[in-house]
Structure formats: structure tokens, C-alpha cells
Length: 68
Image (tube, rainbow, N blue to C red; front, side, top):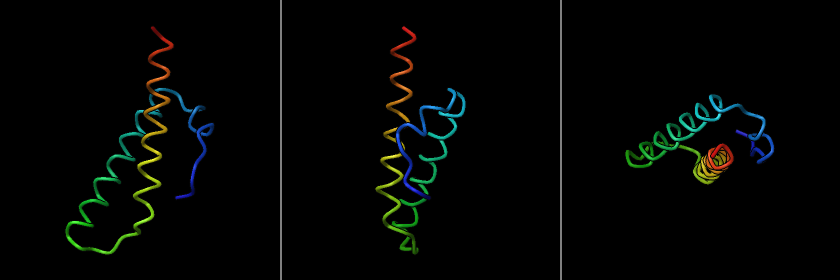
């Protein structure tokens, strides 16, 4: 998973944005589960996925504020 820029996510429509948030949160949960059960996983993806979720949620919040 390459590190994506904020501007890459701004091009998504609302449905795609919500879908990406769900996918990222699901992968974050799966990584936490792997960590808890001591399975092997790539630890650097925690940081990248958490940042991706934060970026996506920031864009979603900004769009909601602009609609009001």
C-alpha cells in the first residue's frame, strides 16, 4: 500500500470516500487482531493506515461542514 496524498482523496465522491473509510478501518482492525494473536504482519502499516483513516475522515468532515 503506497502512501497516498491528501489531494488524491479529495477527488473521491462521497460514496467512494465512505467506502474507503470502512475498508481502512476494517484493515486496521484485522492488523490489531493479528497483533493480539501474535501472527506476523507488517507493523509499518499501522501508521500508514491510521493516517489514511484520519485523512479520509477529515475530508468527510470538511464536506459536511461545507454543505451546511
